[in-house]
Amino acid sequence: MSAEKTSDRTPVKAPVTAAGWATRAGVAVIVALFAVWTLWPLYWMAVTSVKSPLEATNLEPTLWPHSFTWDNFRGLFTGSVPFGTYLFNSFFTAAISALVAVVVSTLAGYSFSRGGHRLTGITGLAVLATQMLPLVVLIGPLYLLLLKAHLLNTYLGLIIGYTSFSIPFGSWMMKGFFDALPREIEEAARVDGNGRLGVLFRVVVPLSVPGLVATGVFVFMNTWNNLLYPLILTSTDSRQTLPGGLMQSFSGTFKTDWGGMMAAALLTSVPLVIAFFAVQRSMVRGLTAGAFAGT
Image (cartoon, rainbow, N blue to C red; front, side, top):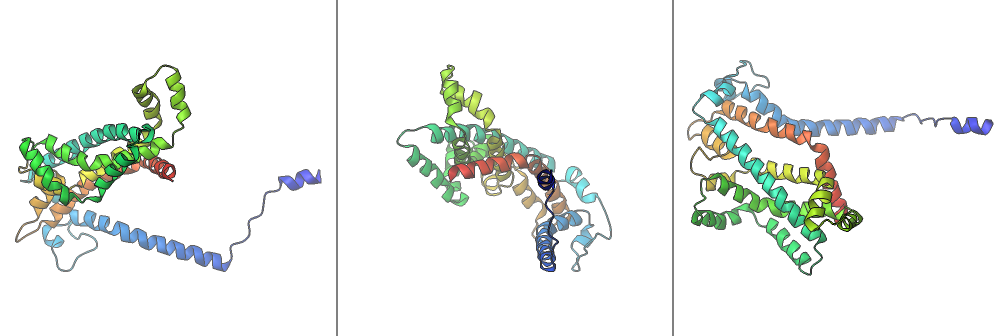
């Protein structure tokens, strides 16, 4: 009985010493400082978006708007800036680019992971080497290619440009996730009569949803924030996206509409932040699976 009573006792936690409290307080202060450093631009963007033009350009900035107004947000949809067109172009091209990149990256990543041919390693390194080139180096050949194909200032041209630098990253990311999947599952599916593509789409892809989500979100975010390609590959407002359109619309030679720019930036950022937190768990799972498989 005494032994049973002893085993049922819960361990008593040691009291926190003064040094322990000091350590916790120091960590809390450091985390709070980093949080303020990170969130301060977002706060300033939100506050400036509801300031009047006079207060937004005041030489003595205010931490809180003295004259609260929604005119900057109303002006995005009722003014001369085609904000709705920019928003649609960004969402359409980013969504299609993410979808195309995920499909191609899935096929390429599965080939790198399960191919088994001699050129698998060389091909994989060649694809990875393309990520070492900056976008400025690639924009010249891409521009000439789209010019010869008459795809400048078109949705298809933008999508081709976006996917050209997204597929290499997506392929390596999906390869790492496929490497973490046991091959026995695929062998069992092959015994049941499924071919290579049948195993991929019926067995492997359903098990790789976190990796697909992580790849798609990364491609969508990179496409949504891309500034160089829309500026070079489009020439009219009807095909311009948010980064390039907002830069050209609110930045003038003699005046900059800071309130309208911050309102547009806030509306542009909020959907992306919400989408990121909505799929955060899938992204973390996909990234960690690929990282552990790579080691």
